[in-house]
Image 1 (cartoon, rainbow, N blue to C red):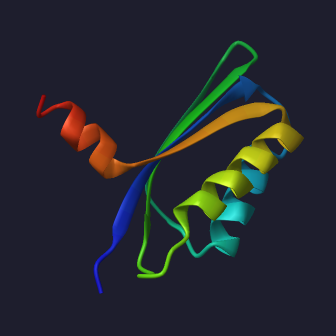
Image 2: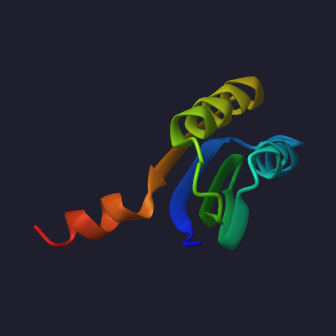
Image 3: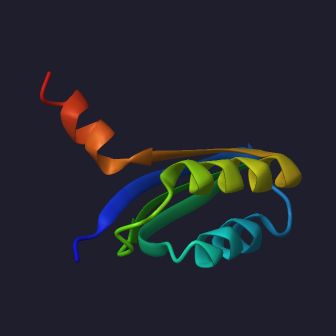
Length: 92
C-alpha cells in the first residue's frame, strides 16, 4: 500500500481551538501529520503541515470539503493540496 501526501495550510486570526479542530477532522479521515510548523505573528495564526494517508480509497475531495468546512467554523482559511501539485510545478 502506498501513501499519498498532502500540504495543508491554515491562515487566520488566532483563537483557541484551531489546532484541535483541524486535527480532529484529519483524524476522522485517518490523515496523519508527517511534519508541522506553526507560528503566530501578532494575532495572525499560520500553520503548514505535510500530511499523509495510507488508504488507497481515500476521498481527497471529501477531505478537502471537510477541512474547508472546519476552516469556516474556526474563521480561518484552509487549503489542502496533493504533494504532486508542488512537485510538478517545479518541473516546468
